Image 1 (cartoon, rainbow, N blue to C red):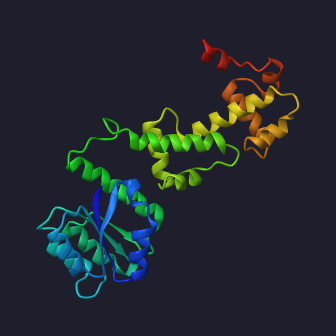
Image 2: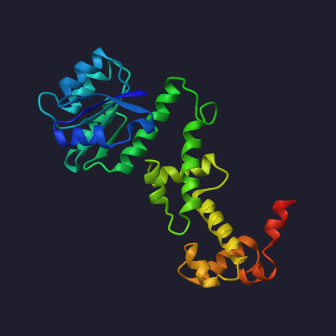
Length: 253
């Protein structure tokens, strides 16, 4: 786990960041929580630290001074929290070697995306095996969780809800599935919906409009269009054929 320091003079922000964010899932753990830059500097100089998340404006020593004193002496990533009025400070911090800055109030998705980029950079710098080489478990667990969710909640499934389940931003989860799965999020959701629809079409008790609703389509015409694009036949044709499509025939060969 990469070691993280949180430095902010507001106790609620320190506590919220330290206790409410799923650090371990992204490969980090909180090493120290500090109320000003001086505390963070003293801890970082005496202990192993990989990342410092710091407010810019703090008493005793602000974030800008912390970055100026620490970064030339120790190899560590820094990310600043900044208000709009602190933009010039943030720009100066980037010149000092700060990796990134996030605008206050910090959004969950922005922090998740930022930490993912930081972790990937740290992995490369430290020569850690990349997930697509040896350590596939990280991506596999995420993809398995998401696909299981889609298979169960296909009617009302959404990218946003899936992202919350695995503590990632929707944008990052979408990219992850494109890069590390056979199907993108939207393609897998379509696959799950169409396969469940096909199964229900084999049961004559279900009306087509009922099936459309059960698999997440409010408009039966949109369902029919999607079904035809997926199976190369309409729902009625599929039902008349006894529940065998050209697509399924090819897959069974």
